[in-house]
Amino acid sequence: MFSDSYVGVIVTINTQGTLYFAYTFSPTLIVQTFSGSHPQHHTLTTMQDLKTVALLCAALACATYAAEEPSAPAQYDFTYAVNDPSTGDQKDQQETRNGDDVTGYYRTLDSDGYVRTVKYRADAVNGFTAEVIR
Image 1 (cartoon, rainbow, N blue to C red):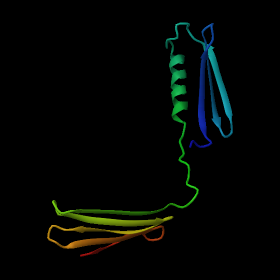
Image 2 (image 1 turned 90 degrees about the vertical axis):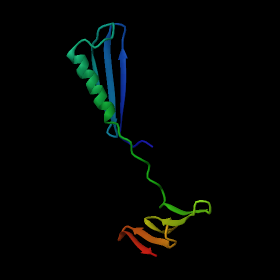
Image 3 (image 1 turned 135 degrees about the vertical axis):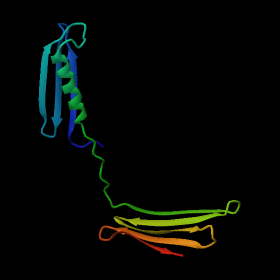
Image 4 (image 1 turned 180 degrees about the vertical axis):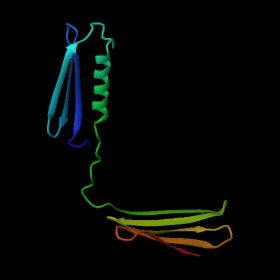
């Protein structure tokens, strides 16, 4: 979703070759307009034309996108496992998230035959912590 702030641009040229720009910026709803003569063949012929186009591009670049915040804390349970006898690839992972708290582990069979397990936790207070068990 877009935030309450946006830039809208309208460009029109009337039959006499007058160029009209209008742009808006919300939520305060500032509306500004510009009009001026423009050659009928609609090419950029003056420095003012270039400045006007640059202003238009700058206005469009100011448009911002704000991701919609979730209405509830994130929650999920995730598991993954591989056991491929032909390659010897053995590993699994489990992770649970409840809001800002994430806990989980992953295990893999090392090339020397030992299983390595990494248990981890991440939260807002302690950050990411991990324990490696072999």
